[in-house]
Length: 118
Image (cartoon, rainbow, N blue to C red; front, side, top):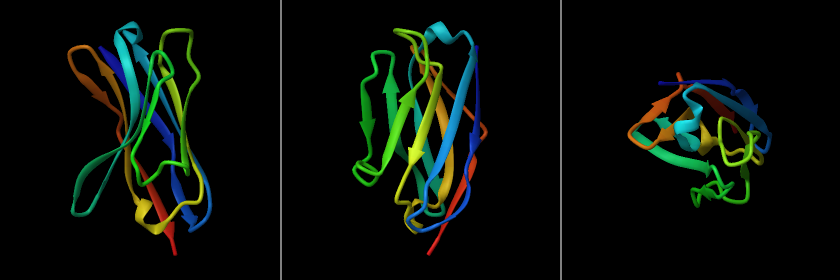
């Protein structure tokens, strides 16, 4: 079992920055990838960014160049990640969920609200 706890988020003006944090605990040796997804009204959920145990990253086109996902984990593992969000736009407003993907299933955090005012 893996537990995922995230923090950060809040209210920011357009053009501002925020940082989200996410820490996994438990059977972290089973985790192959961690990242963030976001959900907003009318949107079932979009992948924002992820990073694997080798440090390979993947970003949604809508955030590439503005968001950066960083892993602060032991070599060849991923258990603590951060999402640096810059130049935020109102359309980035959503509940952001951290996930930890193991071989057989994904584990999710409780979600954190990010609101960007225009």
